[in-house]
Amino acid sequence: MKKIYLLFLTIAFAANIAQAQTSGGPDTYGYIWRDSNDPSGPTYNWIDVLALPGVSEVRFLADDNVQGSFPIGFPFHYYWYDVTQFWVGSNGYIGFTNGQISHPFPMIPNVAAPQNYLAIMESDLIFNPGNNAKCWRWTNSTNDTLVVSFIDVPFWDPNSPGWVGNNTFQVILSAVDSSITYQYKVQTGAPGNLTSYASIGIENNSGNIGLQHSYNALPPINYAIKFYYPSNTTYAVSDASTSYNDNDETGGIFLSRNGQQFTMNSEVKNTGNQNLTSFNVFQRVVNSAGTIQAQNNTMSNALTPSQTQTITGTNKFNPTVAGTFRFITNTQLSGDATPSNDQKIQEVRVVDTTATSIILSFDNGVDAGAGGLSWQGGNGGAGIYFIPPFYPCKITDVRAYIAANPNFYGCSFNIYDDNGTAGSAGTLLDSVYYPAGSVVVSSFNTATLPTPLQINSGGVYVAWLMEGDGISLGQNQVAPISNRTFEILGTSWAQYRYRETEDLMINISIEKVSTIGVEEIAANGNFGNFYPNPSANVAALDYNFNTTVNKLSYEIYDVQGKLVNRKDLNESFTSGKLIVSTETLTNGMYSCRILVNGTSVMRKFVVAK
Image: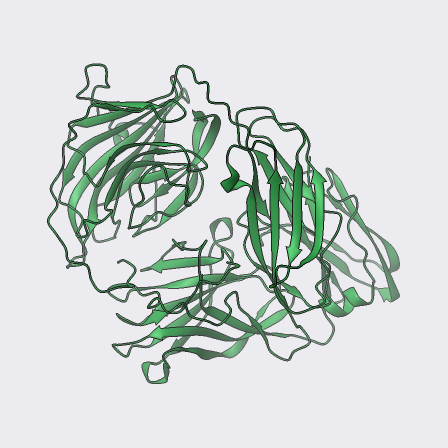
C-alpha cells in the first residue's frame, strides 16, 4: 500500500542488474567498497543465524514501518562516532537513529532526513501475515559481530495477494575491523514501480557523507559487498548539533494561556571527532510573525566527541497570548562542519483554557491541496499524538479534514492510551464510526464521543482509519510542524514518512473536568518551582496552603508521558517542602503532577548528572 497523490504510474518490467564495477569509493571520509567479484574483495559466505544460539526475531515488521531500538551488543565504530543501537526498517535497511524510509527511495548521500543508516537492499518490500517474510538478529558470544537477516521478503505489489518475488539478504557488522558486509542469497521478482525503486549504500549522521554502491539496480544472488573502514583518515570534523528541544522527538506541545511559564530545555551534542571548546547555544521562542518573545544565550561546556549536554535557559516564555509559537535552538560553533544539524524547531501551541471547548490542533486549518493522504486498497489511516495542556480533562470530540472521497466511503476514529511499548499506542480507549452519508469533502468532519473520555495523565493517540479506497485526509504544510504524526498500514503504526514537512489534519476537542484544577492552583501560587533545576540527586519545591491539606501525592512522568515514580504523603499540613529523589532517573526532562485533595498542578524539572 503506497501513498496516492497523483494518478497511477505506468508500471514497467525490471530485471536484475548485475554490477560490472567491483569496487568503489572512497567517500569524503575514506570508506571504500569491494564486492565478491573483486580479487581483493570479500568471499560470499552466508551466515545462517537461525541455527545459532541466542538468535532473536524482529517482530511486528509490516508495510513501510520500523521496529526498534535493538542493542548492537558492542560499540560499533561508524564514520567518526560509535553506535550502540539500531532500528530495522521493513524496506530493507537498518538505521542508527529512528527514521522511516519509503518509496521513492533517495540516492546516497542525502541531507534530507532520515540519515545515519545502512541501505542493504532498500526497496519496496512488505512483511505481511499472509507471506513468509521474517527478520532475525544475532550477536555472537564474544560481542564483536552483529548479523541482521531478512528472510523470504517479497516486494509490495498492487495486485492480489499484494506482493511478488522473494528476497533473502543480510548485513554483518564487525567490531574487529569496523567493516560492514552485505550478502544476498535469494533475489527474484521486481517492484511494480521502477522509479527510484532501489538503493544500496551507507550514509553518515548528517547525510552529507555517504557511499553509494548502486541505485535503481537489484543485486545478483550469491553476492557480497564489503564496506571497509579507512585505515587512516585526515577528515577532521568539528560539529556541534542540537539533538532536540523539550522532548527527544522535538514533538509539538500545548500550553495554557496565562498558565505555567515554559522553560526552554535543549540537548546539544558534539557530533564531530574533535574536542570542542565552549560554544554559544541560542534559544528563543518566537510568535507567528517571527518576533522573539523570550530568549537565552548560554555558553556550553567544552565537549568531547559524542558528549551531550542539557541546556536549560534561565529566561522563560510567559504564554499570555493564545496562538502558534516556535521554540528554536541553534548551536553557534565557529567553523561548524555540518550546519544542517545546528537547529531544532518545536511547535508550541498556546490555547485559551477559559473556553468551554478547547480544540487541540497542530494544523492551521488549511489543506495543502495535494490530494490528501490515502492508501491504495483502503486498509490504513493516520494518527497524531496529543498531550493535553492540563489534567484532568475530558475529550469530547475528534475531527478530521476530508480532502476527497470519490468512492463515498466512511471512516472511523480510534483513541489509544500511550501505555504501549516505549510510550507507543497501547490500550484502545474508544472508537467512533463516521458514516459515508455524513462525510463532507473539503471540510472538517466532527465525531462526538458518546461518553467523554477523561484523561488524567500522559497523552493519547488519535487514529483516523479509512473504510475503503479513495477517502483521503487533509495535509497541512505550513510551518511549524509538530513531529507528532504517524502512518497506519493495516494495524501497523510507523512514524509518518513526511512528519518533518507536514502535519495531518486530525484534531480533538477537550474540556475541563471541574472548576478547580491545574490553572486555579497555579494561579493561587500555592506551589513554587523545583530547585535546583537541573538537579543531579534531589529536586525540591516549596508549597503553602490557606487551609489544612490531608492528602498530597505526586507522580513523575518522563518526556514520553510514561509514569516513572509516584508517592503518597498522607498527613495533615499547611506548608512545607516537597522533596523528590532524582538519583535513579536518567538525564532528561520530567514532569511532576502534584495532587492535592483531588486537584492537581504540573511542574517540570531537568535531571543532569
